[in-house]
Image (cartoon, rainbow, N blue to C red; front, side, top):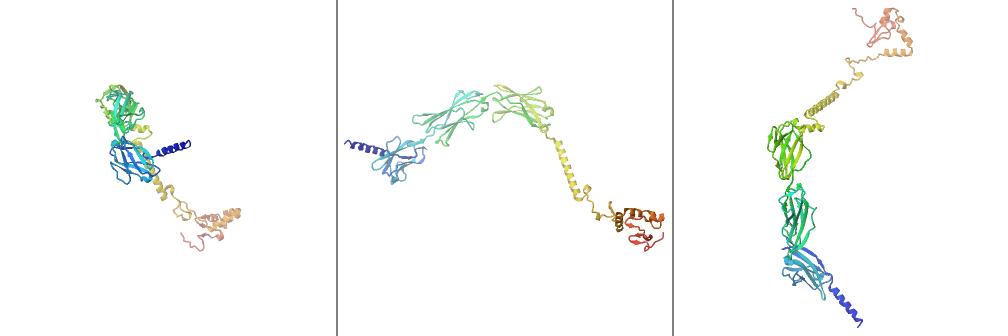
Length: 467
């Protein structure tokens, strides 16, 4: 008896473990919307089962499911069959009654296994609301004051996700962690707080609280607050208006940030001009509001002169919050070109003319080189000289070459033979006629036999004609 008792406890313990076998669920949790169609839930075990049931939330009613039988009450079997250990259900249309925990029970011959799937039927929360804590009125904010504002989304299931924006720019700094509250089976409410110091640039922008929820038609809903900030005209550094044209009517315009609208006064060399007034060539316009909340302040000058460029223009802008002074300088287009190292219209014309002259000179040089004119003329070869050539060279005759050889062999004899006194005939007249070794225009005279040769012919063969 003592030995049997431990075995009984062992079998009982094993039976309990077997009955509590792990059930796999897919999914473990799902978020759906009301009227969503054909939502499937599945439970599985590692062995075949004989039948299974699903129990709806907050209800003791069990729905028996079988793959061979049609469904009822909008619920039908889903899965790979009992032999695969699968027990699932397809819900035809989701209602609020399906919100909560669904229990699946899978049975075999001697045990049951249970699993749970959480179904969240999403309910769209109300449109988010903005509540001001500080200041208590949104009529106008002061620059650098602190704004404390809450955004609330109520009665959503699950709770909505909340975001802050300034126009289209998301806000992260100063945003608190969301606070969730359950609303007596009516879903959840969520609160998000924003703390922010007001800037002048915030004026005219929208503060947006945006709630994101799966049950919203576009999964998004928002509410906004228009921010109005009262502030004095904002300071600017000394401003230079560029690109003005001398001799023309020009507008000197400066953009000023202010709220409410500023009242302006121009002072030109001690001359005061109120907005909407004219004096001499100057006219002060009424400030023009821009889309971003700034104002264009304009002074019109008729016939801009160089003297106008040397003046300093003082501008005073004021509103109910404060006063601000500005200094404006003017710069013409011509002056900007000169200061930048450029040239005026006259300089440009000079550059163009110089370029044309250079191009013409290059063209003339190329033409002269191609036609052989001027310094590019090439002298003809020596053998091609004509009688009109300035450099005409008479070729040496055969006798000249022979005489040069004799001179090289005996220079003394050559010079001695040139003395008229040594020539045949001995007379001075004969010597002056012969002049041995003298060449003239290709003709040679010789002393042999007292005869002269001319163009290769002797005097004996030449007919003399008396004069």
